[in-house]
Amino acid sequence: VVVKLLGNEAHWPLQQRVQYVGERIRWFFEQQKEVVVNFMLNLESLPSTRYKSLYPRHGRVIHDNAITRTLLFETYDAACRRQLQQFTELFESMLTSTFSNPWVFLKGATTGKDFEDDVPDVDTELMKSDPYAFTKKRIPEEIRSRSGTEQQLAKWLNEIPTEDTEIDDAVDKVQMLVLRTYSFIRSQVCDQVELFAESFFKLPMLRRLEAAMAQIELSPQDAANYEARRAQLEQEKGMKMSHAAEINDCMGKIQNFKLKCEARGLRR
Image (cartoon, rainbow, N blue to C red):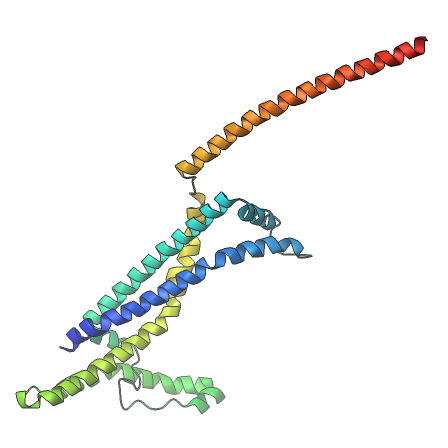
């Protein structure tokens, strides 16, 4: 009953919160595009920099060429969305396995006061004054806490009455067990979000981003526009070269006429 209640009532809200975290991470990375372009453009104003001199040039290309900027930004956004999907699927698999058998998940970690009543308080003074002694003292407590989880679970489950006349008490105890278990699972998931975001979102996205950028291709419409623009420029180039040839011919004739006039003046 407890497992069914956790799966029906707790799984979906926690999954929504993880989805929200993933969306916020994606949004953060997507907002860095303009920031990076501005950073590349501002490198020219620095007297000395440890960055490559090609960064300002590439920044100007991205800033001035709308098609280049659109292709780069769309590829980057697609990489962020793809990594968000993988990040969400990974967390969904973890949550599904956790809520399918939460007791196994509880045995592999320290439960603390939220789950056990007899856990001693943390000696903060000893932790600050002598970390080594605090660690030596804490290790046996951690081992005892983890080994006693199964006994505590069995104790709470046995305390749930099964008689029809005690249904109200059974509901209260089941609700208490569900809330404590969900609180512990939520805390464990929240503790792992930062590690998962670094290991399964940021690093994989940066590794695959270079390959995604190398596969950028113009869309058929953009390629047709560029081909039309190239044909137009070739036509304009031919016209300009024809005009330049006519101008050069005129200048040659004027130069010859000048030489003839100068020669006649010398004869007189």
